[in-house]
Length: 405
Image 1 (tube, helix red, strand yellow):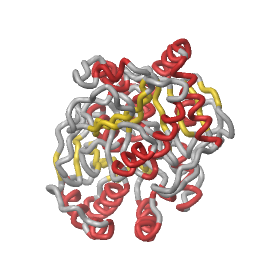
Image 2 (cartoon, rainbow, N blue to C red):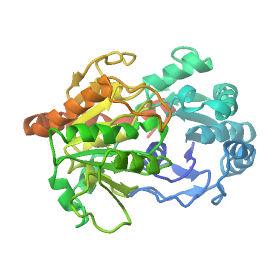
Image 3 (spheres, rainbow, N blue to C red):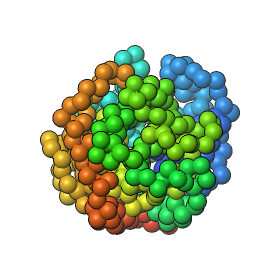
Image 4 (cartoon, one colour):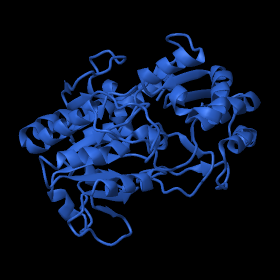
């Protein structure tokens, strides 16, 4: 049996990272739906693409190409092969191709489709999930919360979806974390830095952070915020900072002057050297699957203050508790704090100072002022990250997939 791993692209998202990491650890052939020109992270294995970069298309047009990609995949595999896919579009292609080639289609759901897809896009994607996912030989989720979403909203029987948490190459993370910072940004990290990472999208909730930083600075005047990533909400974030009187810096605009409050380095090939030099990782997501960003922060020895959104943060930071629970007040974990989730509002909606925002402000300010707590939580974070080491997760995948070595 030959194992192949399929994902949409080699871009910088969490699912792409997991697919690339598993392909290396399991010595699988790595296949992309398309080579879209996205910069791959360091350590991405060699890959083949079913197609070259396509023009930017709306969701309906991409769905119309499923049969095309399925035909390409079917021609690239044999009946005895197993294809493990990540992300909905790759999952659809995998299942459709299996009808032609006879290969074993194993799919992994890495988010909550009921929340991820709404409006017209939901009318398209949700029926496809209900129709195609049950045809897979095996369905896996990367969190208990995601598995529950498939059960509650897509008709899967309880226990039908198996759960394997994401992996994190902790040794590689720590090696990369030791690399030096760019000369222009190194002075920034001499300040008490709050850092976060991820695409600037509605789900990630980053637009709450500028207001929180403004509150933190009343107690810690030299505090700074670093937002690693990029996305469609970048301009909205910049506008929010300006409205609050926060000075910003972004990549491509010269070196920082040292007077800025919020920094936008963009997508960076090595986020770990920034994470390792910050004081605390803030994770304000409104909903998640299982956030790689949190695992990476743990591996860098960072205390984590996270929204107790569904799903993922609780499973990562408070694994002994019921994953369906939700913090109503700040809840201590060994690695930091879980805080009540923010309300799900559309991007651009007025962000009022709420009780939840005040909790974030108070906990972040207190942690920035306490080197003892930073050390205590940081040591626990490194220990927790080892639960996601490649050797641990590779053994789970081999057992689940029936691989002999």
